[in-house]
Amino acid sequence: MPNTDASVNTIGAHHIDMVEQYAAHNYAPLPVVVARAEGAWMWDADGNKYLDMLAAYSAINFGHAHPDLIAVAKAQLDDLTLTSRAYYNDQLGPFCKELASLCGMEMVLPMNTGAEAVETAIKTARKWGYTKKGVPENQAKIICCSENFHGRTTTIVSFSTDSQCRNGFGPFMPGFEIVTYGDLDALEAAIDENTVAFLVEPIQGEAGIIVPPEGYLAQARALCAEHNVLFIADEIQSGLGRTGATFTCDLYDVKPDVYVLGKALGGGIMPVSAVVSSAEILGVFTPGDHGSTFGGNPLACAIASKVVEILKTDCYQENARQLGAYLFEQLEPLRASEKIKDIRGRGLWVGIELYPEAGLAKDYCKKLMAERMLCKDTHEQTMRIAPPLCITREEIDWAVEQLYKVLS
Image (cartoon, rainbow, N blue to C red):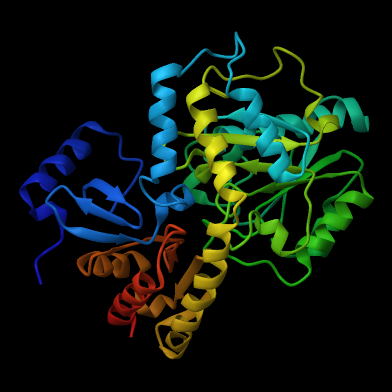
């Protein structure tokens, strides 16, 4: 088999050397240099073809270079790309209306990145707490879960339990309490008169695709309603079709007070994120309270409007439901392997957790790269499988073959 390690190929090695010399070392990527992509496939700088089983952490839910999304982006590039929010633009209103409708909500606050959207949700909850709930100024508390991942800003790492995210970045912001994910008693005990929100990933992504215990989300939602606490669902990775529903909350019959969205909302073309809620909640903002020069820009809004249109067909959700079930069925025999501790997830979002004695997950990801399949590890022992939702049954069969090669 030809060696697919880009570091030993002339073109790939040149690009890797430049990144290592001139880019800050805040990532440890696999040694492959991607030069183009289409659908579920990517090609490196030396022409080798790989199946993408990561989809840019769910940002490429609809596949690389989706023709409808590319067409909308190209058309908008010819008309208008940026006004800032100093003026209105003709794409922002339709986008906000369509996204609010998709979420069953009334109002949208658009931003750029997922972390910005989480920061926006935090500010929303705090101001709502002070102006609507009557929490004393500077006393608002937000409850978060252990092993969470909501981003890496200084505010967000203040309530992370990941030492890698926190070490060297203090002092940390007060106003957060961490409870064990899945523990309803701990959540109820943490709620007090100053609690304004519970921020939760319906399925924890970076933690290793951790699925909540049966009934947890619905009962947490009920607790929040009982105590007048906002239930904020971070669906940045889990939402927009990934788990077989438009939102993972849908799988558990839960309607949050606030959705936090990002990644796939930009169609793999632009960074687009949003906080979506009721007019009562997002109506707490007044001009000057919050903003972003690029948030709600017309290019991003045009693309994201097309994403919403695509989601309304339920095509990608259905593919995630059907092929997700098929993928789990094909992986089931792997549970007998002495290397495998657990296989879990929903839809086309799978975590394969290895026993420590089996070695690190990143080593298996490197072996898969040599077989022309790309995925990534998390929390040392878990391999994440999250292909573009346009993947076919035949492509899943091929991917499963590679997994059996390296894991059996």
